[in-house]
Image 1 (cartoon, rainbow, N blue to C red):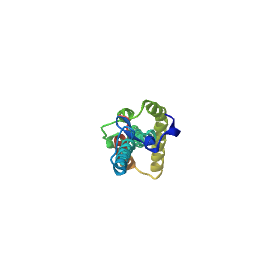
Image 2 (cartoon, one colour):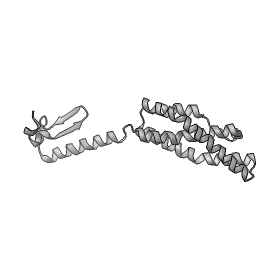
Image 3 (tube, rainbow, N blue to C red):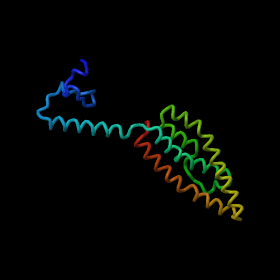
Length: 170
């Protein structure tokens, strides 16, 4: 049927679970009932797409989630392992992140991980250089390291959990 020859009633299409319902197939008793069905279908479609996979939001949340783990690993290797008793390491966190990303996004994350690790290494190096310059001993440095990592880890973990629920792939 040519769209230009269709009536307005025939052109109205309502998205629905099992395809599309057209007004040709459904007889409505009044315009009020038709309007109510259209609004209901629109609300349903908005609710379904509001939590669809979003690569940008998942990528941002994965970065916020993973970076504190890289910092912890670098602080551990710098002599502060005794103050960090986290149950997960970087490998477990990366595995967790990849489970909730689409395949292409997981590959992109793999390509970004060395940059993230290098950035964490540089951050820790600068942290220790500045702290030693101020004359702080190693126990004080490690105590400060916990404070440096605690808040970003808490924020990263909460944002990651929220992103997984709202925008995650699996």
